[in-house]
Amino acid sequence: MKKIWKILLVTVAVAGILAATCPGKQRHADAIVNYLSNELHKQADNLVKEYEKHHNNNSMPDEGKQVLSKLEKSLIDQIKPVVRDVLVVKNYGLFSIGYFVDETDGTTRVTTGILGMIIHNKNELKTDYNLNINGSR
Image (tube, rainbow, N blue to C red):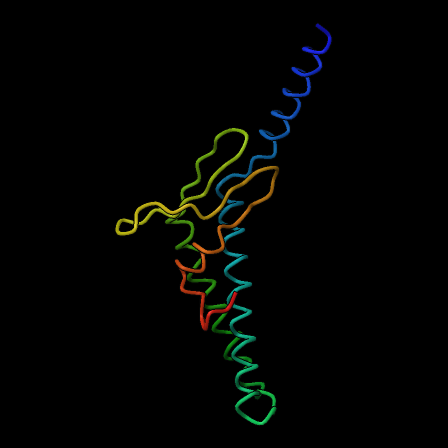
């Protein structure tokens, strides 16, 4: 009988921890924007490397780097409201799942949240935002 109570107590404790740390929509949206921001930054770095490769290893002028930086910031500022608009998060109590909802493509799972962490469905995010440029990652 004591063994059953221990199992029940551990089960309730684990369920309580999962429920208390289940991320909501804002955490999912922030994680997606951060992920996309990092991916855009990687693409900008690739552009700088390509420039240097095609210009005899001369570094890109500061003006070019500034334009890329402003472009990145502008794109992220435009992506933020789009993510909030198309993201639907279903909270199942112990975990949550984020979906992009689109009238033409339907529903696509893009994130899973558990224990306060967000796990990205990277293939879907790269496909949805066409970030798989030149077959990178």
